[in-house]
Image (cartoon, one colour):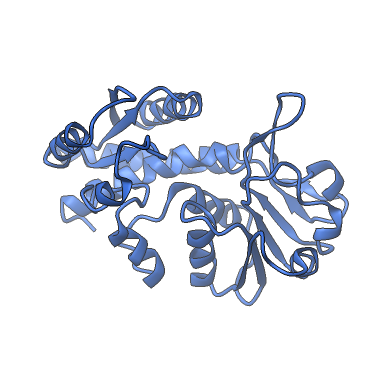
Length: 285
């Protein structure tokens, strides 16, 4: 029977370290601050926003939300973003995505200040993830995956890691982060031949395909570590992951739950990135 590896102990450990770092910055007259830019009022954005604000408060980071109407025009959005870019008190910027259709994300992503882009929207940060350049910011969710693996002392060097999902938000960046730790990485997707066969050879399996309970026990190698990034709603209206956790527990050595797994670590990573951004901007890193 596998062990459920929960996110809360990881988040708590990160927060304790962050509190000390924030206090040290404040002793130097520096006050790290996050600005969230939200367009519209999507329930999932609002839920994440509440969690982010609570985490920032817990560790002593300042935070503000700029809530914009869902029908905002491109020109007005750009004006707001440029104002936050030039705001010397703001060290980290989080733009909720996806943006509504009338906004051109492909243009906007180049406009966010790369040094304040703490969730890897600007292609400059995407490139740094590819290069393993730690002065950049990987997306918060893939970084949360890595924090969990580190906290629970999962050996990555030389291990076979399979990532199911190839999005720019999770799949591709988490593959690069695993590769940086010397894992041998395979990325799978909807057109992968014999997905079950490939997955069942993984020492570490990261599921981020966005399909409720698609990963069954036959996908899991005996003793594998399974990280479930999926956030789905089942037929009963309950949150569930991409992994059928109950069925896979007998094969996995460790498995993250949903809810209570990766998602509960992401806001702590967000806070960590705000502190890192503050230090970079003040030439402390």
